[in-house]
Image (cartoon, rainbow, N blue to C red; front, side):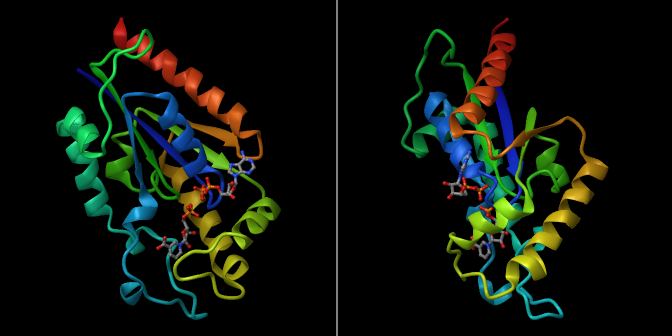
Length: 200
Ligand SMILES: Nc1ncnc2c1ncn2[C@@H]1O[C@H](COP(=O)(O)OP(=O)(O)O)[C@@H](O)[C@H]1O
Ligand SMILES: O=C(O)c1ccc[n+]([C@@H]2O[C@H](COP(=O)([O-])O)[C@@H](O)[C@H]2O)c1
């Protein structure tokens, strides 16, 4: 049995979830783990000196729980797939003994233990203007308070990205304003290549 873990990271609203879901649809024996599902409860997330809740740090996430879920997949990908309601399939390009886990999130490469598990790393980037625009139409729980993007989210993105670039190599940067289909075919082609190597 072979296992491949693909990391799809990037800026908030860069298109990580969209790309991960489309990739998952194309890869029969794949599952997705999303970092967004591991945010701590608002009551335990502290606020900074400006009163902004500090959501854009690893401390705001239950990374231990996320790692435990990834550990379950690593231990038994087939059972993990079944528990997600997916049946294992065998196709010409995807043998039934090769499993792919897609891990997506805005801080996946900043977490050393998680980053070290990844076989391939993609980082979706978009400009400040595009990001601000996309984020303004997204509603989080709790919703962004006025001034949150400029006063907290974007500065934290720059800080987290600097830290990532200081410690992580082998990141493939993708332009998140490309068409969804273009992004998908780029990543899918790479994964197909990895699957072929795995089969050899
Ligand atoms: N390639 C793309 N081009 C234009 N808009 C996109 C693209 N990918 C995603 N979006 C849009 O951007 C927003 C954020 O996408 P999402 O996948 O949820 O981002 P993330 O998971 O990185 O926060 C959504 O409104 C989505 O429809
Ligand atoms: O999902 C949540 O519980 C949540 C609550 C508050 C804020 N968030 C925001 O979620 C962002 C990361 O998710 P994403 O999908 O935009 O990359 C990050 O910028 C946070 O500010 C997310």
